[in-house]
Every structure is written in structure tokens, then in C-alpha cells.
Length: 498
Image (cartoon, rainbow, N blue to C red):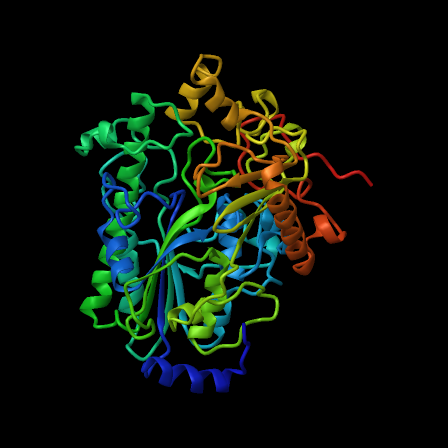
């Protein structure tokens, strides 16, 4: 990625896109939504007309991946344009984002952009320990409320708060706004999907789950919350259209990571990391309506926003901008996304995490687990978990409960083992033939060459980007403070030995 001086960037950027003003940016992000669950991506049960419109009028990404399958770290990577292993404490959830790491929001604010957010911005965690005085997503807009249609949906009027933000702007003042819904994060109102008129028989059930009415209805309740978020995004776009600001606004819709179900969120499999993404920018995307199939990370958004604004990209931002795709330039064929996990919910003795790294290409997902002796889903012993629940990396849910209660039942035991069992140090999956990564091919003679090549490519990338687990240095993720609430009064992070 070329990093231009700001004056040259402005000269080059403006004639190319025919925009007399720097683009506005509206970033719409859901909380815990997997790639498959939009209409444009093929699901006929969930209704997402706003996402579908943005995809049709812009670019739809079919292989977009979060940098981490956990809220705070993923959002940190989005803001900083860096993989989580470069972000110290921010690689953990319920941590902080140190102020020394530049954010696209901070860079845009310094360049004269009005910056704000509503709903869930950078979260969860604490701002002050990182040396910040404001949420990294910007100034909070929180005044509007709604009566939510179901329990579990927040009473925040996200779109109304965006209206309040816009009301203080002029057409000449560029803006950057983060509209972050808490939906479809758990908990859901049980039965809300049926109340909304949805039919569980029509659910396309991922094969990682048992085919049972409990699971089908749980997915319907999840869909209802996705639809609520999509409605809010639609209202926000309507506000831009009323002001005639839509064409010069880059609208991005995505999610921080995958769905809150077993083998989804908090795992490096596609159901935990592959997220929907569509980008519309009338003044800046050539040949709209395209589909981009190359793997991309969400951390690419930070340099993209800065380059679109004609600003230099800080050297510390190692992700590559998407601007070449906006210009409809041919991407290199050998693209890959890189994904990581450190400490999520503290579901093991001593607050230990499950450190892992992964590379995802068109053909394969390769995962390296640094501590395979640990339980990936969290300990089966609830007494050592921060939340006092078994397998505490997974949020409580009807699906999780059903699978745990039937984990020794013939026909369900294999699925339960996939979700709750231990993993070897290396995992390799043929994603074209095994899209939900259920058959580990590690050690297969047919795939040894691919396994070795992907291992080398992953570790080459980790060395290049200075991952302490590979190049040496402080490896403190198991020992950083956890700033969240504690359900278990006896739970604490083990101090690092001196």
C-alpha cells in the first residue's frame, strides 16, 4: 500500500472520484453476526433490505473476516488497522486500547472531521487505563430512546442519535460516525422469532448443530435481532438521503465477529470469524454492484478510510487499504486473511486464554494452537470460570444447553465434541468441501504439502508483523488486568511469575 504525503494524496484522490469534498464515513457494525445471515448472502429467512441495498449499489465482500472472534479485540483491530498481536492489552476482551496506538478516528478528527458514535463503540473495557479520555470510536451520542419490540433488544435509538449528530453539521464539514448496535448479542427473548412470524422449518441449519426445534428457534430469535439492526441502518441511510449527502458518504455495514453460538463466537472457524460486509460510496466506487471474493480483514477499513480522505496512513497500520478494489483494479490471486485469539472471557483456571493464530485462503483454513492442553471452549468445571458456567467461552443459550445436556447421546456426541472438546496444536480444513470446518485434515498424506505451506506462510506473516509469540518479547496476555464484572468472587488472573 502506498503511503502518500497528504497534499499529493488530495490531488490524486479528488479527480479520480469526482468528489469536491472529502468523503463522509458511516460505519454500521452489528455485534455477533455471521456472514451467512443476510439476504444478499443467501439466507431467505432473515430480512436485511438495508444490507442488501448497500451490497447492490456498492460492493459485497463474500470473504470478509474479523481479525479476532471477540468484541473488544476485533474493534481494536478495526480502529487501529493492525492485527491484535501488535496491540498489547487490546488483544484481550475487557481490557483497554493504549493511546499510543493510532486510530483512524483520531487521525480524521485531527484533519477536521467531526467524529462520533452511538450504541456499542469500542467495547467492552475501560478507557482510562489506556491513557484515553474518550471512547476511541468518538464522542458519544446517547440521547434518543425507543420502546424495543422484544426483550434483549436495547432501548437505544441508534438512528435517532445519528440524526442528532447530523443536525450539528454543515455540508462542508466531513464526518465519520460509528453506528454500533448491540444486536444480535445475547440474550434474546426466547420465542421472539416465532412471534415475528418466522417458521423454524425454513431455517438453513449449519451442520455443526443438531437438528432440533430448540436450535431452530434459537436461530430465529437471533435473526429477529439482526433485522432490528438492519432497520436502524436503513433509517440512518434515509437521513443521509434527505440531506442529499448519501452519494459522498462511504457507508460500510459489517459485524465485529460471528454468531453467539457454540463453535461460532470465540473460535477461529468461519462461523466465528467470517462476517458480512458491504460498502456503498456513490462518488468513489467504480462499477458498483460488484462482488469481491478475495479474503480481507476488517482491519483494512482503517487505512481505507484514511486513504479515501486523502490522509497519510500511519506507519504502524500494517493492514492494506481496499481502495484498489474501489477502483476495480485486479487483486493479486494469492490473498489471505489472518485471524487471532488471545484471552476471551477468562473461562479457565487463572484466567488463562486460548492463544491461537490462523490463516484463511480461498481453499483452506489453517489454525495453530499454542496451548493445545487447554480447553478451547473453556473449562468444563464452572468453578474456575469468571462467569461460573461450564465451557464459559460460549455465551449461555438454548442451543448450548441442549448440546451440553445431550453430549453423550448417540448422534449428537460427535457434534458436542466438535464444540466442547480439546483441539490438537494444528488444524487444517478444506473450506470448499467442508465449509463449517468439521473434518481436521492435519496429518493427511494428501494434504501434507498444503499444511506445511500454510504453516510457513502464517508464521512468516507473524514474524513480519512482530507477533511476540513468534519473535520473542513480552507475552503478557494471560496476565493483563481484566476490567470486567466478576460473577465468580474467587476468580482472578494469575500473576505472571517473576
